[in-house]
Image (tube, rainbow over all chains, first blue to last red; front, top):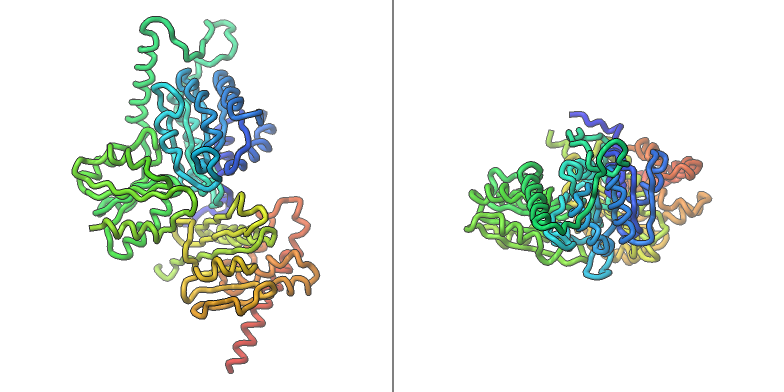
Amino acid sequence: MVEQISEKILVRGNEAVAMGAIDAGCLLFFGYPITPQNEIPEYLSKHLPPLGGEFIQAESEIASINLLLGASATGVRAMSSSSSPGISLMQEGLSYMAGSELPVVIVNISRSGPGLGGISASQGDYFQSTRGGGHGDYRMIVLAPSTVQEMYDLTFLAFDLSDKYRNPAMILGDALIGQMKEPLLRRKPEKMDLPAKDWALTGARGRKPNRIKSLYLQEGELTEHNWKLYQKYERMKKEDIRFETVNTEDARFIIVAFGSMARVSKTAMELAREAGMRVGLFRPITLFPYPEKALFDISKRVKHFLTIELNTGQMVEDVKLSVDRDAQVYFYGKPPGALPPPEEILEEIKKYYA
Amino acid sequence: MDSKHFYHDVIMAGFGGQGVLAIGNLIAYAAMKEGRHVTYLPTYGVEMRGGTANCTVVISSKEIGSPIVQRPHSAISMNLPSLLKYGPRVLPGGLLMVNSSLIDLNEVSRNDVELLAIPVNDIAIRNGNPKLSNMIALGAFVEKTKWVGMESLFASLEKVFDERHHALIPSNIKAIQIGAEFVKKTETNSTNDSK
């Protein structure tokens, strides 16, 4: 098949996120600079104003997230991006937005922690992203791109999903995917059929005022609100799970990895195949909702799972929760620093492949 | 169709300001123009500030998994620290290109790789612009490897360079051609030598 190379551009993952946001109709950006995600605000600061949008560099991440809360309450598509320490500062706002049911997109091009840590790639924010981060019983949609094209596609999708569920959606990338360049085809995916934003604060002329809030003090009110949120999260699990499988059909051994580590693992899987080992790859694209059923179904046939992460063990817990009882789950993790090459992962496969 | 499958990778390294990121970007862009799958992985942040800069470029006929390469098939070392770091990693039988203007060839410890020594700074100075030594290197490397066509490379300059630098494109093209010529001559000479 002939590829339409004339339309492709070579861009960084971070730039692809910014382009995806613009093509999804995002008009407002609020943020505060931090490595390694600065190409996102840099691009949007240049390209949002000519579209009638606005770029605001706030005085802090706390200000950014609260500006975002206010903006999204008006029904406009808005976003922020940051990196790990900055995302930590935004957790209160994220909790409020989940409670207030506001659709926003947050991008975390994560770096390494804890604390200020460093600027190298890391997947140490898996728990923070998928387990809430802020207070209260809430969930965020979390999408984990593993190519530059997906940085674009999933940003577009994140806006749709956040609108579909009136819930914050996060892009969880890392320094590797954010900084690397790959060809990008800037083609808008088909937009979802989305409900009208009749809840938005647009001026109450001719209608009853809308209220956006997360405070519920009347008896039974908060219980009901939490059940409503719960139903929403359950619906996400039914309707919006995304994952990729490669060579799982005949596999006797499955690598589970997301984002940047999934692509290094993909090469490791190919090396293992060349060496005659029947290895497959399972890559969750939605980290919440997690593709637990798909993983469970595979674990009825395949009994060996190796989870690869750029941390000391976070997603592996979800893998263990998902697979059948008699399946073995192994783990290979690396704290931030040197990125593991495929050969290193191949050695781990050899250790456990029976 | 198996003969059409190919996979190339290179780690290019030097000190910040030598322009290795620019030439990595150019070769990746040119390969993309030719319909290849490519990844370009630069160093960023602390390493870039005053230290060494490097990038890894992968070009393939198939979708690329890992953009991280531990043992490359080829390397370009623009200064000594880069040679010491990446020289030992090149796969046996691979290509090691070194900037012999800044690197004493006695420092090359490998005899199981093909050595391509190009005095890129000297050539650039001789041709009137020391700043173009990275383009000399690029021309030499592409002439040697034929990973991309020269025309694609030239056409990529306006995509990779910011518009305010477009006036410099002709001198960059010339530098690439001079680098390529150097390799052609060296290869002709060595063919004659062997006769």
